[in-house]
Length: 105
Image (cartoon, rainbow, N blue to C red; front, top):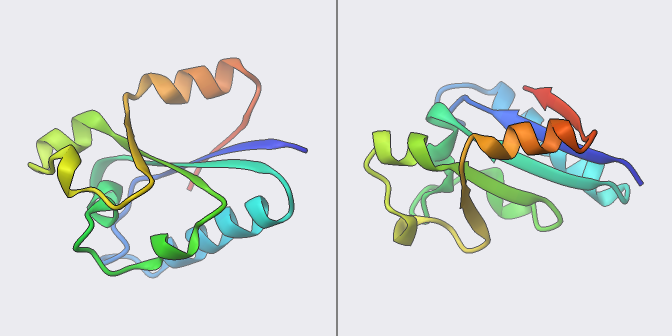
């Protein structure tokens, strides 16, 4: 089993590519790989509980939201979808140091 760490910086409301990236994350996880999706910059907009998007279909994917990006967009931790965890940018460094296949989408 491989470990994948995918980084998404775009909002699903501005880019049609994001839904394809979510599908990639889902496919990797469903194939038995440990998969993490790290939302940063405008990517965190999808993490809000009120947002309607494809994150709901990522049950087997570990979803992290960058704490700095959340603060910059005035999104509190209490506003996040169930299952979304807040993490620092250090999570990217940790993943790379652990040898996870890191892909900026």
